[in-house]
Image 1 (tube, rainbow, N blue to C red):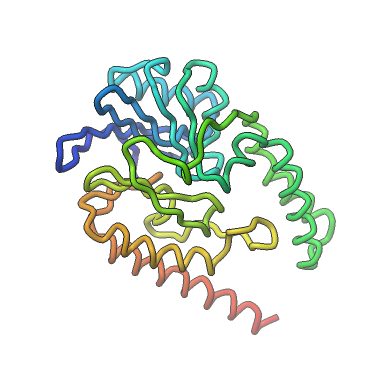
Image 2: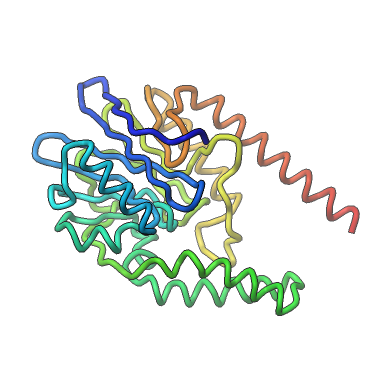
Amino acid sequence: MSQAAFMVFESAHGTKFHRLPLQAFPNFWAYAYLIQLDNQRILIDTGSGTDTSHEDLLRGLQQAGLQPSDLTHILITHAHIDHYGGLTKLKQLTNAKIGCHELDVQTVAHHEARLALISHRLASFLADAGLDKEEADSLLSIYRFTKALYQSVPVDFVYNESIPLFDFIHLPGHCPGHVALRLDDVVFCGDMVVEGVTPHLSPESINPYSGLDHYLDSLEKFEVWARDARLILNGHDDVITDLPSAIDATHKNILRRISKAVDVLRES
């Protein structure tokens, strides 16, 4: 993506949405979003929790005229570290109610136990795939590295109960509890559609409700659910205004990657 920038969007009914650019990791940018409506001040996603990401988040809130203590709710689109990792530092500065999908509660609120479980499943998967111990240990170390930034933060509510102001749809595949949120004619899609790539997809044997089958099904549902949205704001790229074209490009990227994998298997 190009250099991330602070921006303000507006829905058809006049609600303003502030886009906060966060350098989640070196040269890797993510967006959080801030909505102020009536007495509610809602933050969508929090960045990774690195010092730089946290400083960017505080700077973005200040640019929008708020402090962390002003927030009433924090909504997580999905439990990947570049979207929820900032909760650890942010929770110390706010009493905002934290929400995520019920399938992501374990990752957010019981991080250490969840990390141990998924690490064990990943190790088994890598062994079954034929990697030697040195290669497997290297991949496991990379997997655990960014997770060390985070410490468990309690979740106050889950999305199968309610979300303040928003409609939502559950879109598993990229992450078990991935959701898209909608207010008026504006949709926040997290990592459901990412420009130029396909979101990474873990095998379901490692993480239930993950994987290509779930993701393709979610893409189909998302296209129908969001078809009349005017703006689709995502976690890393510029605003999407032509969702069918973006989804078509995603399908083509998936087919390209599958074709490459099949070619490798034929050669082996």
